Image 1 (tube, rainbow, N blue to C red):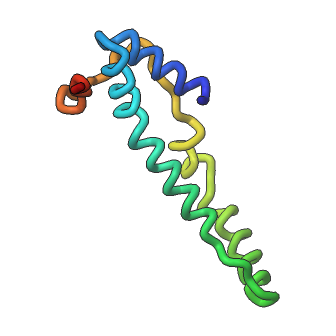
Image 2 (cartoon, rainbow, N blue to C red; image 1 turned 60 degrees about the vertical axis):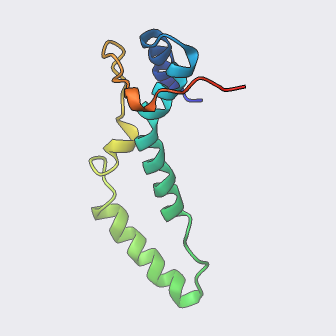
Image 3 (tube, rainbow, N blue to C red; image 1 turned 120 degrees about the horizontal axis):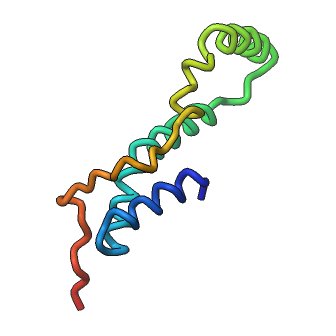
Amino acid sequence: MAAEDGVILAKALRDTATVAEALAAFEDARRERVEKIVAYGARSSSAKVPGRLGRVVRDVALQLVFRYAVTDKSMAWLYDHRVDWDRRLVIDAGRRPQPATA
């Protein structure tokens, strides 16, 4: 777990009445970002092994992509994410865990 995740979990524990609610709030708070990161990883790992000509085309294309498309600004969503400790979590009552039935 990244340090940032620990802060979000700590906030969830602070802002809810039970551990189950805290875990649900933690999941809600992280879900969108985690899904985006997983999708990003899937896209970046889906490349095929190219042949000789394909490697040349790939290398030229990557130089252009990294020069013009992959910039600090375009990657800020991934690397500049910060957690505001003082902001309370918004807890969706519809997502609260239901009591276990025996």
